[in-house]
Image 1 (tube, rainbow, N blue to C red):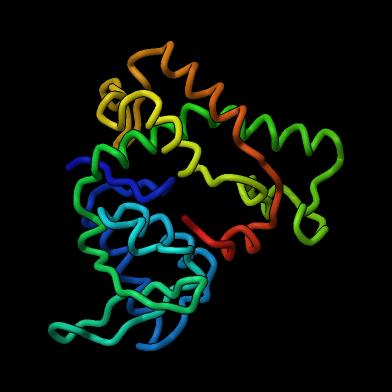
Image 2: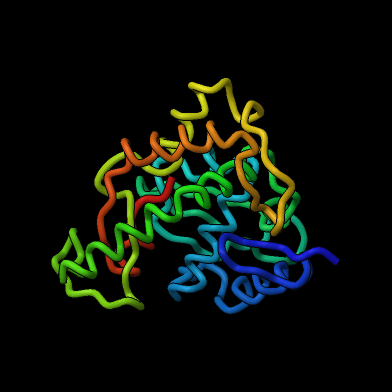
Length: 216
């Protein structure tokens, strides 16, 4: 069977990915906050795969909780938004094949990965591996390049997409890995790279600070 991806996590099968999510679900009691960092980050990436992700995320994700059963005997996940409101989401729905928008978004992230890596290396070479939010010293294992200073990655991607005629106007090469590929039109890829470089206001946070900032 084909490999399956949730964010950067690769699973041998979709069933293996589903089992990883189920382990998070049953690691906590109903009503509990998902407070382990790796579990929180997995659910953030999982929620991004939902076909109604924007509506579920709303103003941003503050935390996740384990919701009581709504239909049948099984608990589920609940998003706690930054404004205090709550909404449930189905992890089964998230694990359905990604929409074309999600596939393009994954490729867009991959196309600008060199910019993110170069920013991190430049800060490291300058001896300024500190959080731009709290001033906390950082190390290689506790550092996240973040968009918290300006428009989110989603905002930058959507603005670019509107200028080229929508998501369907961006044709992708056949995937070499599930969910990934390249822009087939390399001139368009260069335009996206330049657009991202022009609009991305990058900064450094600790991994903990980054995971707790509003997610859109």
